[in-house]
Image (cartoon, rainbow, N blue to C red; front, side, top):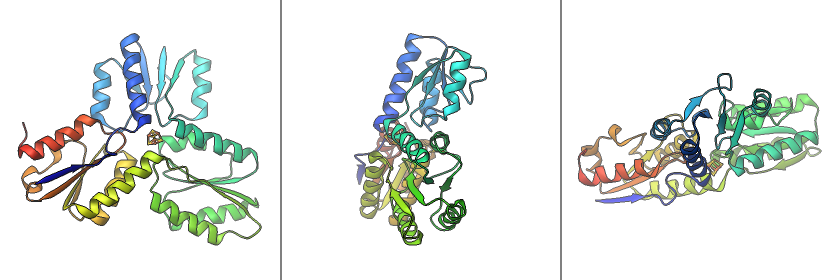
Amino acid sequence: MEIVIGKTAGFCIGVQKAVENCSKLAKEQKNIYCLGEIVHNQEVIKDLEKQGVKFIDDLENAEGTVVIRAHGAPKDVYKTAEQKGITLQDFTCPNVLKIHNIAEKYTNEGFYIFLCGNSRHPENLGTLSHCGQYVSVIENTDEDVFKALESFEKSGLKKLLLISQTTYSLSKFYIVEEIVKNETAQDVELVIKNTICKATELRQMETEVMSKEMEYMIIIGGKNSSNTHKLYTIAQQYCPNSTCVETYQELDIQDIRKYEKIGIMAGASTPQKSIEDVASIIRAGRVN
Ligand code: SF4
């Protein structure tokens, strides 16, 4: 039996820095709060909670120091923190900050913005706070794009910017790009910026290559991790025997061991330990 672990599986640099810095702060000071889950992974959250980090959904009951995770935060969080005398430790990933800057710059220049991604995802809530009233979020490639184009036309604006959540599906972005290019009038100034981060792009590409070669694919990541979900979608497309789990406890080890070539890939918020646990339990053929 061959077990292949993806080279890009696990923490990306943005997540790694945020988790390491948060843990370091917890060792140095008491009263460390983190606004939202630092990563969409319960193992990591539990570990930081043991170190004293308190996870909160808003700044209402916070005091002392509040960590901004790699996804970033909406603009009003910074204002509220200042008013309440809260110190922010901002670990927003530079790739996310870049999108905030692009959104703000083009909004100020009178562009309508199409943002690919999930409208409720914390990263996009931050990005949306840098856009004005002229913005549409495109989650799905079909209906959403045409709705967005309709809103753009109604706005009367003649400038359009297409950007994306850092973890959006690359193949979906290309489809959206194609539709937008074909459907916008000649007199529209169209700017397209693929803001999917490199780490996401490489991970999605490696998942596709692996899924074509493997008999069984295991994707490890948090239940509400959007980038993990996308990897699972890619894996299913090329390897029908694919599963997505948060920890090894969810795996049917005996069933998996029927396959000769097993691939393991993991989302950007999956710690190395979860990946190693899955690999060693499959090798051993049992839990413990
Ligand atoms: S997935 Fe990309 S944008 Fe998000 S934290 Fe990681 S490196 Fe940064």
